[in-house]
Length: 376
Image (tube, rainbow, N blue to C red; front, top):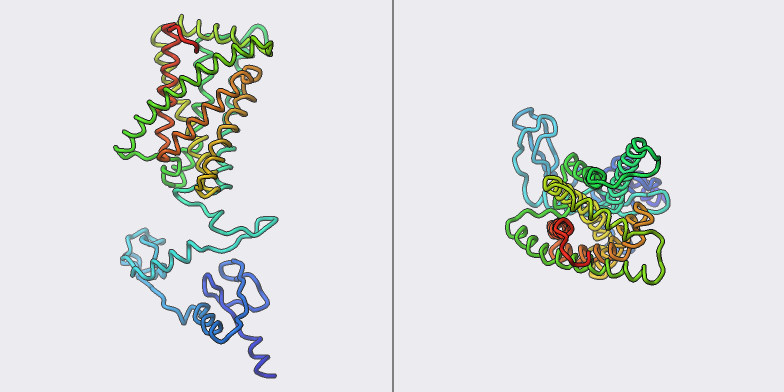
């Protein structure tokens, strides 16, 4: 009986930090992680368990002293002293590798309804987790809506007839501002968190930049064909009696404004449109696309889902933000972003889609300005 009582009083150890844990507790008092230790069924399992969950004092430890302030650091991963920021000597490889393996395994975190593996919620320098990515994407959308509504209100207050915004080169230029500011927040987030910019899909090697330019030129040609298809589709809707809004009149008036503008305004418009393309790709491709891709773990089926979902999200948001004009461009925008999604997946470089979008936008502006007679 005494032996049974003693065995019940035995203290177990946390599998993550090695701290002693009362058998009646399920959370480690030191690191706070959930501890689930199956009961061993044989002597071999008991021996394995005693070796695995040995106390900290029984394990191999590594300590190093800071040459500057004298602090003792037991972590084999740290390369800088947390007290004075002095450079520390490198620890043995076996300790460092063991620490990395433990860190990669992680624990379990309870999120209101269920337990989730810790590594799914851990922030990483080069990969989005689902909660982090959707949060950044949502904040960017909110910033876009706020800036867009602010500009609309300023124009509405300055016009004699409230609710009617004049169509001129100034309004066309200012309409690009929300999309330019759109991508500032993700860049600021990556910079302040000191994460890698490849988290957004930026790969700046000379070879990849050259590939991105080639892929971008081919992609821009595909987007021009989609634009031609869009014009044909709009004509078909008109001929079929679907006339929710006189979009042809709007396009004609907008083209006339661009054609009557000076060259300096065309250069400025091209610059702003290029910046807005850069910004939009950061949000939809660098954040949203990469977040969903990480969630689906990069499988082929998952990539197809991501391309379709991002294209559907973009075309839906464009429809909502530009009603009723957006109704006529929903299908074209969906195809437009499908092509960009495929271009990005070729080598996961966001420069592919940025180059393609910028070249396409400049081509369309030049076609309009010089009144080249093709359907656009």
